[in-house]
Amino acid sequence: MTGMNSFDNKSFLARIRGGDFAHPGEEDAIDLVLSHVGPAPGETVLDAGCGLGATADAIGRKAGASVVGVDLDADTVGYANSRYPDRRFVAGDITKLGELGLPAVDVIYAFNSLYACDDLEACFAAFREGANARARIAVFDYIAYDAGALAEADCLPPSVHSMAEMRQAPELQGWTCTGIVNLDQEYIGWYGRFLARMDENREALGAARSSAFFDEVRKKYADMRLCLERGVLGGALHTYVLAS
Image (tube, rainbow, N blue to C red):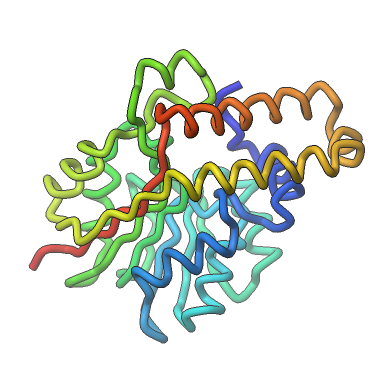
């Protein structure tokens, strides 16, 4: 099982995480990212691949920014709009932001979403077209250290990007990398906590879907943690600014 991006599956993961988050670390991860790239009050923010909406809402609350989230799944976006009415959520492809009628943005966040994008350069091209001058980007995501071993583990899609790709693709579209924060150990800890929550709530979670589905999900995330521990997979925060 390589995909967990349907609304039902995202909702299941949210029950484990204790909130409508689609990334490890939940609010701790958001605070970490905001400490490196924080919008000023009143700036316009894009949450690219927003999932169920809690991350966009947290950014809005913590930074006093105007936040719009974009996600490919219409059911997910419908939930986010109903659950977080103070934010705006739009169904669409983040590589085609120009077709969505969004306002120009000052800051872009991507929390564990770009790993699933096959055309990374197209993502950053779309970000450039929708951004104000000197806009900033924070990408909190997986890093593929050993693509072959990661493919054998089959716990993530083959589109997970290498560190080199995360430098080169943005630069080709006019973005300058301003920093890289290694989060390998943090990801190991976050996934350990995630698995512990699964085990503590096995009965309720198994009843929510099925015990077989529970076991399948647990194996997927245990395999991801093993890949992290073995140095096959990593995590990082990349920050960028739009070159003038």
